[in-house]
Image 1 (cartoon, one colour):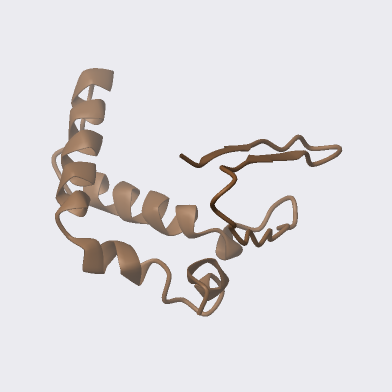
Image 2: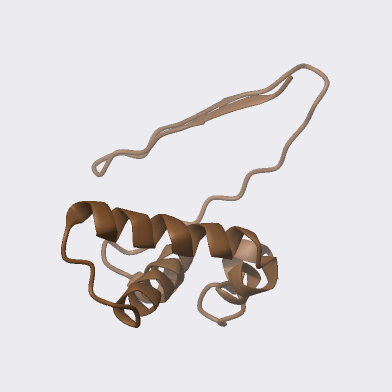
Length: 98
């Protein structure tokens, strides 16, 4: 069994990698500037989520907002092509190894 533990702190990145004796893995690290949303594929997901929730009836409670977010994320689970589209932008293709 292979397990990975990855942690980083702001001042000095630390990486811990624990592997089984039978598996060899290549890991590539990409250090991003401290503020670089255009280089972060997570921001594509955040934008998609905000747009989807904003297009619906306003969620006026935390419970309704949470429900709307879960609903959207559940829809995304069923649409891998949409998720892959987050990685097609030239700024974030590095993540997909393209």
